[in-house]
Amino acid sequence: MPKLFIPGPTNVADEVLEAQTKAVIGHRSQALADLMGRIQPMLKQVFQTENRIFITASSGSGLQEGALRNCVAERLLICVCGAFGERWHAVALSNAIPVDRLDATWGEPNTAEQVVAALQRKNYDALAIVHNETSTGVENPLADIASRARQVNPDLMILVDAVSSAAGVDIPVDEWDLDVLLTSSQKCFALPPGLAFAAVSERALQRAENIPYRGWYFDFLLYKRYLERNMTPATPAVTLLYALETQLGRILEEGIRARFERHRELAQLAQSWAQDRFALFAAEGYRSKTVTTVRNTRGIDFNQLSSFLQKSDMVLANGYGKLKGETFRIGHMGETTSADLQSLLGQIDAFLALRE
Image (cartoon, rainbow, N blue to C red; front, side, top):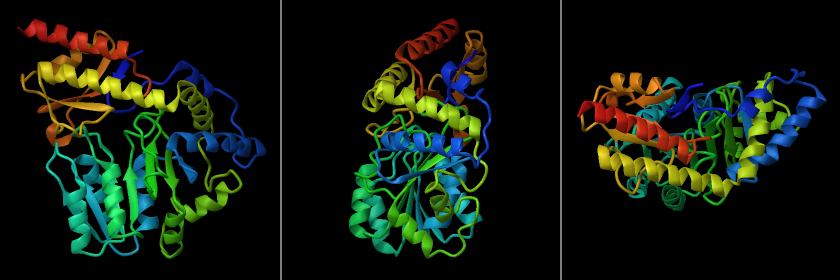
């Protein structure tokens, strides 16, 4: 089985894969309600919130759209510092949502100072930000941005894409007073693709009540009504819910703090190695704890590197979008261990040695 060192999907434990082989149950059965009832409190622990967690059969991009359609009544300010901020901006435009971009140079973060200045220049009722920009390896200073933005506008909706950081990085949703924090199953949760989760505040639900055209599939008020009965509006991905229950148990057994620390240590290992052999794309002080974007300062052929690693059943990620070839990315999230990562880095060193 190939070992994935890409920013998702990530490797899934055999125990979690096996959980999907349980018998399918009716999506309106008591057994399904009981399963959802067991999952909800565990998800709340991981998200560090007392708010409800919506579960959708979709990718995180679906909840990007849902967050905007439910929470933007007037005008959105979206922080863009990479490809996935650009995607969220495209989602806003495709839904005819009035939006302005706050751009940072790729490799640099969006900062609280920039956000505050923008909020003071124009009236916005929602702010969207990608916490961990998978294309550039930048982790935005979310706590500082959220705190200072809330000082400018206490009623501001703060919407966060944590697709490649939730369950791997410490994001205390309630402490930071976030309105929507969304993520996907196939990154730090180390689950198969196909589920997305969103922690949603009471303030966000109150906003949704005043928005007439929220869509249907991602209507937060509809999800709220069904979740009160431990159900979902449409047919859930039942076998993935079995996998989710099993994996949440494994995450909590590891300990959420221990999991955060493991991801931090993996990032230190990858970034120290990259600085010695190449250079890092993300600015110092704002580097991701789940994916390292390496500047290809040696001009290596990524396809040759990839073919070399495949002989050892290892998979690495090229640069994303316009950074393809200029960078490559090392994913170190989910179930990745220090031994796994050291093995990968050793194989890349072996490839480099062949070129000398």
